[in-house]
Image 1 (cartoon, rainbow, N blue to C red):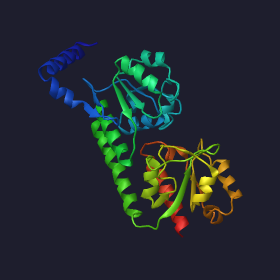
Image 2: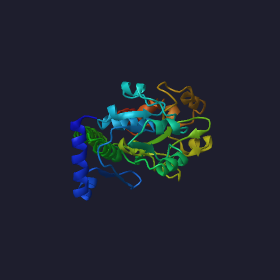
Image 3: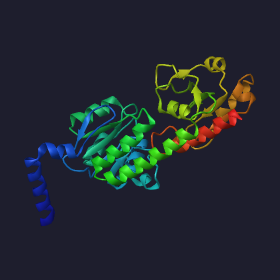
Length: 295
């Protein structure tokens, strides 16, 4: 460490002693679980434990501070070269420790509670992400920018995202409601309830989620339930960027309104299932699909 860096560190430490509350408040945010996350200085070594949190860190201007990420953290392109620390469900704790992170960004419903507890017991600073609305995505970008010392670029990107969201909201505000079924897996059939962010996307576009009132976030449902609800549109997202073959299995049920009118549509999962700015690209696609059904 240079004399200049040593001097700077000393002055910063002295400042902390003299102004502890002011400084702590300076780098302090509330995460999606309502926990206060505090850092003494901006994070320099960040680990991201979900593909969507990796994207959010890049959106916050902190991509070059990510030292570890999970499998499938593949956007933007440079994210593919970050050291891997396992996948969302199976994390390599030893690798995480070896990377000496000063901030770890966790996905509440995606990462195992056991690993979260272990990381808390090891006294790592954790930011827990669980975006339950489209507006929370903008908040998370801003939060991560504050924690990484890249607040200005984070605020710019956050504002840009909110501008696009507002435009979509205005464009589709008074359209006729369309009964919509969103499916992300086929055996068994999985959908989303009213508590899920994708439900908000459907509503934004003037759709009515036929499984809005189910209690769990991503419920498993029966074929009979879909046939009974009789959606006008079926929207699918599969395991990858290609239209899943199982979407066209619905052709076996010609009594369905969506099948009769040929309203079976696909949205790439990365554009709708990830809680990142790209969800608005998926929203724009979904809105266009529902408009076709209206016509």
